[in-house]
Image 1 (cartoon, rainbow, N blue to C red):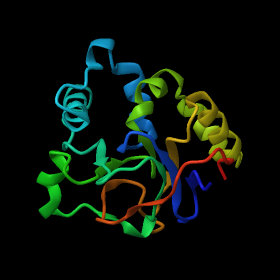
Image 2 (cartoon, rainbow, N blue to C red):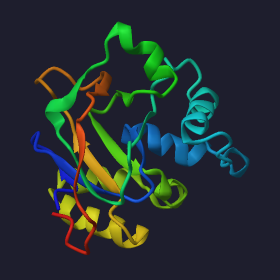
Image 3 (tube, rainbow, N blue to C red):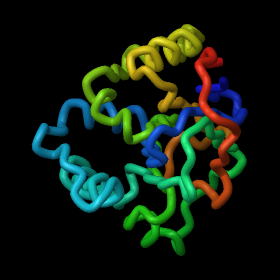
Amino acid sequence: MGQYSTLGEPVRFEAISGNLLFIDPLFFEHLTHEIEDEDLHWGQGYDEFLSRIEKKIFEGSKGYYLGYFSIPDFQQGIYELNLNEIMELTSESHTQAIDKSIPAFTLESGSFLIIDMANFEALLSSFNLDSLIQAVENETLDDYMERMSEKLENRGIAYVYYHPDDDTEEGSFMIAEGGITRVRAASKEKSR
């Protein structure tokens, strides 16, 4: 199941809750060290939770370090993100990005994770940035994604190395409407 993308190909992941987080692995690693148990109350919903966490942990952020998307008319299953549907965040979309009404996120490493929020807490204790970097460098992402999926007992995580052009590693991006589509019901297939 293409649970990672390094060459611009579409990426697939299992959606369990229908609530997705888009986050640079550097930022997620930072969360694993900074988030406290008392921070883990969802409040009004995931969008409110992520906005609150972003303000607390990423002081001075533009308000869209953490991207959020709630899949409309959600049904559990395997979803696909077409990377051609990612575009630079426009100035007209900043307000929507800040209030989490569009999936927008900031990259510093040139890569991002897609995490189903059902896996958020489990990943806080199991994610290790060095292991991900090593898997990318050693071209062992198949094994890495398989191990992560086994720990989570689902495939609700994906990794994307995103360089829309040779010079872009950093910036703020958004996903166009219709960029994430349901492919099929979930199954127990391998990650790649």
